[in-house]
Structures are given as C-alpha cells and as structure tokens.
Length: 502
Image 1 (tube, one colour):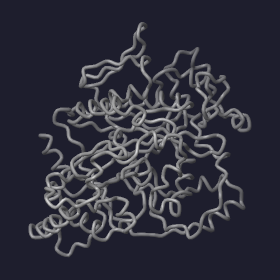
Image 2 (image 1 turned 45 degrees about the vertical axis):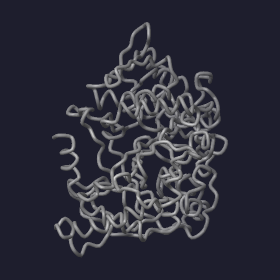
Image 3 (image 1 turned 60 degrees about the horizontal axis):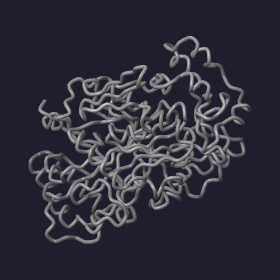
Image 4 (image 1 turned 120 degrees about the horizontal axis):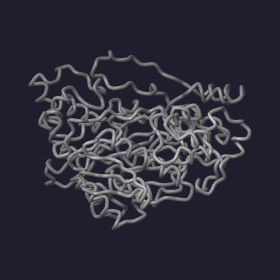
C-alpha cells in the first residue's frame, strides 16, 4: 500500500549522521550516541557528466541496539537570520528597519517560540518561529518575499522550450540492488522541484473532483499551520512563474491584491480569497504534507496537507500524528530508522532540500485509493487473464525541504505511471526489476505488494532480459546492481527527447 510514510515511500528522509547534531549534545550524550554508530564503506563509481547528484549520505549499517533517548525540545533547526538582509534588499525602508539582522538572545528566543497551535497573525511581534525569525519580521517581509534568498535555494531557470501539450515526465526508475531499507537520498535538482507534463489539465480536474467527493480525506489543516501553508503556497507560485513564465504569472492591484494567472487552465486566482492549500489544489498537480515542530517535545507532526495520490490511506488517517506514528506500518522502521529520522528532521537546513523515489506495480493507474476502494481487489489475487498492457510502474517522485520562515518541513510527491511494456527498450531495467521481484527481502516485498502482477510481469522481464543481451544492449556477464545513471537508465535522455518531438 502507498502511504505518507512510504505507503510507497518508505520514508521521507534517509539515515544521515551529522557532526553538527552531535556537537549540540553534552560530552556524556555524545559518547553514548557515538558508541552506537557503525558505519560501512563502499566503493564509489567514477563520475561523468551524466552522473546524477551523489547520495546525501552513505548507506549505514543498522544500529545494533536502540540508541539512547535524545531531548529534542532544546534542538532547533538552523537559524535563517543571516538571510534576512539580502531578502529585504528591495523592501521599503520603513519595513526594512523592522528587521533585526543581528543575533538573537538565545534564552529569550527559546522562551518566545510560537505555540504549536497558534495562528501567527494573532501572536505578538516578539514571538519567534523555530528558525529564529520574529513575527514582526515575518510581517515586515510581507506577502511573496524573496524566498530564494531566505532559503538559500535559487529560483529555477526558465524552461523556455517547454510545451505543455507534448511534455512528458522524466523516466524515473528508482530501482536498486541490493534492495533493502535505505532512503537513497540525493540533493534536489532545483529546476525540477515541480515538474509538469501533458497530463496537467486532466490531473487538476481529477484532483478537484477527488476533493469534492472526499473532502478532508484529501485536504485538511489544523491550527498552527497558517504560516507554513501561506509560505508553501507563495514559494510554489514563485517557482512556477520562474520556471514556466509562458504559462504562469503574478499580478498585484489595489483592489484585489495578488492574483495568480494560469494560462493552461485559463483561470485567475485572487490569492486572499482562498486558503493557501485550495490555491494549490486548483493549480498544482502534486501532493504536499506539512510537518510542524512541536515546541513541547521538539518532534515533528503532520499538521496540514493536500494528498490526492495515496493508496490505502488518506489525510484523515494521518493528520495530527508524530513522524514515528506515521511510519509505524513500515518494515524495519522502528529498529533501523526512527532515531535517524527524528534527528534528521531536527537539523535539516533550508538550503539543502533532498529528493528520492519509491515505486510499485499497479493494475491500471490508480491515483487515490482509500481503504475499501473496489480497486483493492486486484491486490488480493493473481488474475489469470490479466493483460500486460494494464500493468504499470508507479513511481512517486518525492522531495523534502524546510521552509525558512515557519521552519516547517514539507514533503511532496507526484505519482507517475509508466507501462511495463516500455521496459523492453530500456537497457538493464528488465534484469534489475526481475532480480528485485525474485530475490528482494521478503518483508519489504510483502509490504510493496507486487505479488498480484508478478505472474504476468516476471516471464516478460526474463524474456526482455535475454533479448537485450542478444541485441548487445546489455553485457552478457553483467552482474545486476544499481545503475550508475540511477534513478534513470543509459540513453534515457534521447528516448525522453524523442517522445517530446525534439
């Protein structure tokens, strides 16, 4: 089943050990934690111009024992104060003067952190967000501030040759061998945070219909998420206008304030007339989950989101839960990942968003499947006459980033479907997927639930594997492993360009 915690996405983030975190602890705590850490080395492949970004962290061996508890209440995300000067460069002097660009008094800051359920608009000016930005400074920055400077993540380059009518998503194949419970994180490609394709219009309509039918099962928000929701919406609209200027723009008038213009849908949205998540519902075909830090314990909780692409779960079953509670169904999560996930969330900087992918095999193209949905019956049996043409690889391409003002962590993903038949022309993919399906760790494969289509898929993969060797597409003695081009495959760009007509 697909879920927020890798209900097809095993987790939002990977196992990362940072020296910065350890330095925050006392000497005794450091010694206890370091005594649990066991690292393993591995060879590195040779980089080329086509090699994707390196993994954010090397794979780690599982901890032998449960690590000692950590008091996250006193561990805050990296401060964003040093970015205020550049972000305020073009503000009127009266507003710029309200920005205190110096360092905060640490004790005062910790006593003045915004309460978990508080609406920032109702807080005093000396209240602070977890990234050490005061509410007075948030208000001085105003609507649509310079998030590129605030976050340290530049806006994307304009994609001028992009045509929505012919655009197809890049062919993500996040297949790995050996296949076990790691996150395989890489640095996010800034230009590709939000990727549009020729399904844009139909997907927007489908998501609007899902909301009309299911309501809070696909979109909801709890008190305290107001700033994060506004901040996320503004960052997304800035990204779309920069990346696809031929289709999106923002205007401002005294009568309406900010207005978002969408030339694909032929609509305009008055920003102040809708909740920020509803602005996204009508304009962005991706899912977003907002995780907020609770100052009472320092852990992160799912407090708002729009999620129209979940299989076997929904917003209403996860909202309000802590990170570890969301991930309870995941195999090996508590033993191997819970400690590292909590630590990673506590220290993720705004300037280092990451990306990863998860995958599964589906009959047809189910986008949203709440518990009890009729489509679930396909997962319970192997249909003898199931045609290969109905079986698809579903990839949920995911990103994780921290927002600079609210300090919230945003998990977003987009569901992409590819006919399994396409693998015949993709070097190494049949052999790699066949290996995973036949020899993957049992508890992970049971959770991934590919059994219902394996009787159709595996014989064809084995056939194509041999065919690719015979044609010289794959070396005869090739030993199955994660591809150097991962999450793609050799020659993917040529195929991708050809499908778009250039």
